[in-house]
Length: 67
View: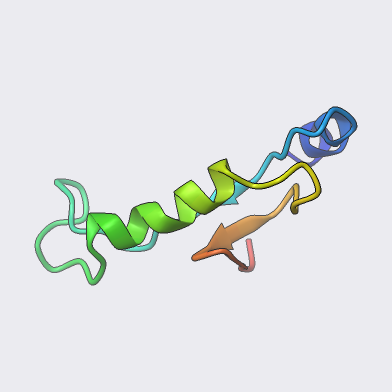
């Protein structure tokens, strides 16, 4: 991912990973602590980053987190 993020940054493309958290879906189950809307918020944030936004990172809720 880091190589792709460096190469694609030159053309304004961001490459990031997003963790939506533990979401109430078929996979997360009823006991998950986040709604689908809450989990999707960070994904939408990453998908709509400006060309000057971060690249090569791992994020939850628009904040960088450890790998």
